[in-house]
Length: 216
Length: 243
Ligand SMILES: Nc1ncnc2c1ncn2[C@@H]1O[C@H](COP(=O)(O)OP(=O)(O)OP(=O)(O)O)[C@@H](O)[C@H]1O
Ligand SMILES: [Mg+2]
Image (cartoon, rainbow over all chains, first blue to last red; front, side, top):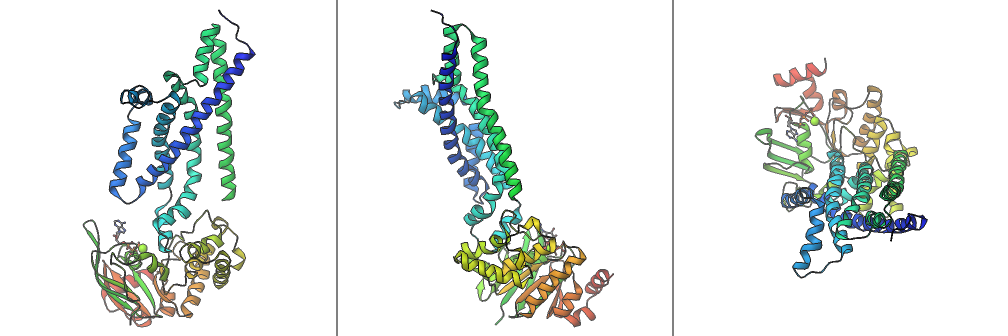
């Protein structure tokens, strides 16, 4: 039976958007944890660490996210490890995000002049202390705009998780469109909800940038 | 015993040898002015003394501790050896107070309140006690350089290295920094200064070291060396800088 596309469907879509946000948040935390390690490994003066981190980034960025979703969701069960769509999506997006955040943050760290490291070292700060008190605080300013930019990409890219049956905003949209035969109205609504999530983030990033500039 | 002993150091970047068999002994309380043409290795020698650059041969000792020994704790050495750079290198994200107290708090584990008191004291010595809570970007170049000197002083070093600390400054601002250097020298600090300020070298340098193509080409008591250079290279250099 075909039903109308009404307010109740919009409510369902908004409810499904919570899962988009939940997946984004989880993936962002996971990606940050791995990403910071990767970024720091890439700038420390220990060649083997640098190579490992670089290899990780090349592998992740050189392969489609969709394939990793399939590998984890369809492949792991064959190896006897059962995964639900939520775990599979969270893992795949964390790994995917970590390579990007690792690169963004490495860029931010190396943008700080070498003389700042030297000034810290000359005062007796260890490598870790130079990072913690001198380099990282300065690179945050540089890192915020691209990091938020990435977060916006991440929100939109979580729609890929629909293909393994994870019901987030896009998947809910597909289901609603199939039930109502109103794909245009449904997907416009879906787009509007994505926009409502992404736009404030970009604005927020801009306001933080301004605040950091004032604090300088 | 010498505070700084440098014996036969060689330093290369790739195939380019920058320091060639450099030896230098500096006693406690000496103020040594290092002069020489651009590229003669002055900065490199300074950076080797606090272990910022490794050397390929020779020995460097500061207060008996061998700098170029892998077993040496550079962290400890650098608490005793302050260095001030041409480009100030203050931490732009930290207030003047935090710039000065960071290392005392983190490296020497001073209590924040005690560190702040030290900051006040060293700022007074460079004539900037009212700038405790300013940020580097709010200061003139001369003031920034004085903060950098204060930051170094706060570690209570035994030796201070200055690498062309007035070269990035306008002439009016140079004077205020030189005055600070002068008072630090008068307090008995052992100092090695790379400088183009011949007047300062003459008045406060106990010794002048002239570097040429990676070697110490001529050295001696400041007044004598500057008044009567023996080697043609130093004569040429001096007539060039004194226009
Ligand atoms: N990191 C580096 N890599 C390669 N070469 C270097 C490096 N640092 C310095 N050099 C070279 O070493 C030589 C000596 O440099 P140094 O900075 O010690 O000279 P300087 O006497 O301080 O000159 P200036 O008066 O211009 O500061 C120069 O030829 C320079 O090009
Ligand atoms: Mg130099």
